[in-house]
Image (cartoon, rainbow, N blue to C red; front, side, top):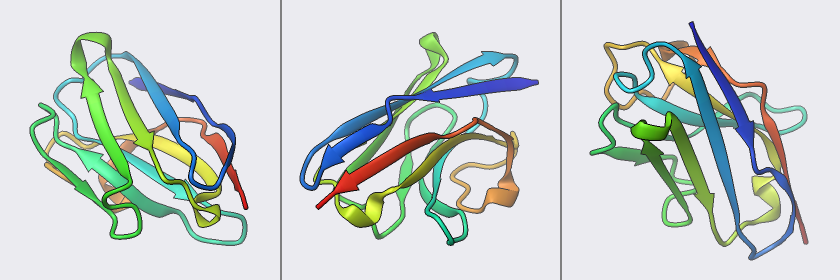
Length: 125
């Protein structure tokens, strides 16, 4: 079992920044890829970013590329999502997730075994 808890969401003006954190507890964090997804009201859950188990590689959705940065600190069992140049269309509940161990940079929700409860990000215009 891996438990994930997101924090850092809130209300921010367009063009501003937020940093989300996801703290893991339980077993087998450092050998799993981690990801961030988001879900806006009335829309399907959307892939945002993923990072390999060792932190050496990352991959981003086109919609956030160049604005968001995913990172991890395995010593602290924590993954981060730095969000810059935020847009109103970034408004969503953001979820962190831990992937099945065999995946490198998974982009589909089916590739993830564990999920956090989500944190709300609202970007005003």
